[in-house]
Amino acid sequence: MQAPLTAKRSTLSLILFWHKNQKLSAQLTAIGHRIVHGGEKYTSSVVIDESVIQGIKDAASFAPLHNPAHLIGIEEALKSFPQLKDKNVAVFDTAFHQTMPEESYLYALPYNLYKEHGIRRYGAHGTSHFYVTQEAAKMLNKPVEELNIITCHLGNGGSVSAIRNGKCVDTSMGLTPLEGLVMGTRSGDIDPAIIFHLHDTLGMSVDAINKLLTKESGLLGLTEVTSDCRYVEDNYATKRRREARNGRLLPPPGEIHRCLHCADGWSSGRCCIHWWYR
Image (cartoon, rainbow, N blue to C red; front, top):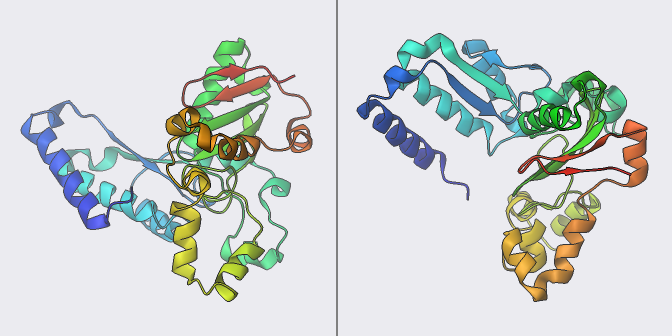
């Protein structure tokens, strides 16, 4: 559920007030902020200053549901804990994917759209994919820099990444977190011309189409009931539609082979389940 930014600010203020009232603030040594989109500018975590705040604002058009809320969190944290002004750290979900080669992140669009407007694949869930890569290396007893795997982040949002020699070389999410797998309420990949049809033939507005693709599609759209996998698993009536999601969970084998040539395994984010890739 997406709460209004004013509600998020009020909720966050209440939480921070509770921490201060419980005298827990004295135990804080730093504050980390997970940021969904950092564009091309950030390839690692950084201490937050005015330039970083501006960078998050600049990337907000690529993550309009997330980056503005992140800025509220940063603002409230700086206001509530001034003693940690120089110890607020931004961790960007796009940073891990900045090692992708050009052939992975460029779209087949006019090149000037990338050069002038930054339209390219950025990916998401990078914090999770990085963690899973590290954990998979431990499970396989192999140095990270020698690791070739597919990592999976499977929650209400989902993405897969190709990891070669410990670095991300491809990922399923794109310019925004809408591209890729079928998700809880997000459509994932569709024929782009569907958007034109919805607008030109069915008369839907741009805002309505955006809402449909981000909040009314995916499992929720397929089942017409829920975005909760637990319900879908138990409900026979939705079984066939569940298979539509499972069928889109993984990229085609040829694409995997192109990305990795060989793979040591599969590793899944939410519960660190490991599958052998044969």
